[in-house]
Image (cartoon, rainbow, N blue to C red; front, side, top):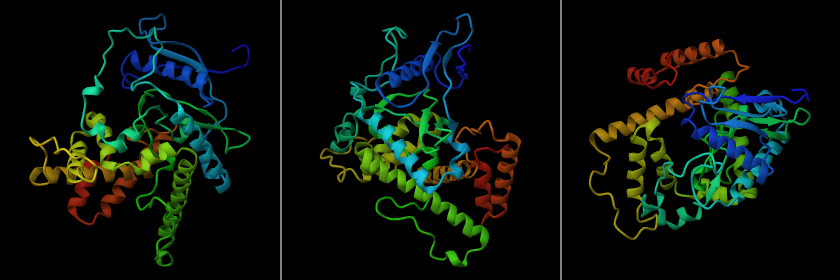
Length: 373
């Protein structure tokens, strides 16, 4: 632009959300965040959710985020700077938790959707579960950035521990706090992580490991330290989010998440939650009988096999995403060579198949690997 400022024009992909609604909501969220919080977000300049406009597509025009993407500098940050950045992130999330909304849903400008838009009567959904006191304690309507990977966090070029912008606010919604809180992708803990006061440690047989195994153990310990820093900072600076994420019964919390994930993950994860909730019904504080008697899944026969398959699928998906540094959709940072990442994906799968302990394990890897080509 003539004033030397740079802008970004964002045109949504066809599979990035519902037409009109996704663009209209993202524009409203950007405006709200900039007007009513100090959370750094790109300034909204213009937008249209009408694909019949002269451009011929929905669009959002916003100021370009300052700074540098976190994934470019994370490996070079000192432990002290990483701790400072994680603290800064939890303080930004604290602002989300402190904003009060009167209802759940998505944000829109008043003029951008009609009164005839679809509405869901949530007050008629799962009436028994929503009366649970611990669930109600963490159910306040909250807005949250739910896609905090390193590509969406910009830090200062002068001080890499200072966050200067968060981008990609598409699909941001106002939902119960217990559905919003989550590990930022780059701070997700390793598999053997222990919550609470336990400090990350090296495995007891560390000195007996070979060089490659020692490097992996040191890497996992470093990951665990970053996760612990986020857990502790959330406890200190954002107690409501800490309770919602770490103290609420996980099956109860997860059920509401799984209801919304059935399109992508199928019905099995939700059925597993229902089984766990039924088993813990009395401990959860419910006095009335468990309401789902007819058609309730049991841990027998085909359900047990399906549940076992789902757990294998989840473990393989999680492993692949973690070690390929990507997400469920196979996102690769623009600065990363895609062909090299594809070779890495193929090599990793072939190596795991070679090291499989049984033909069944090899077949599971081939069947459940998220990026087979």
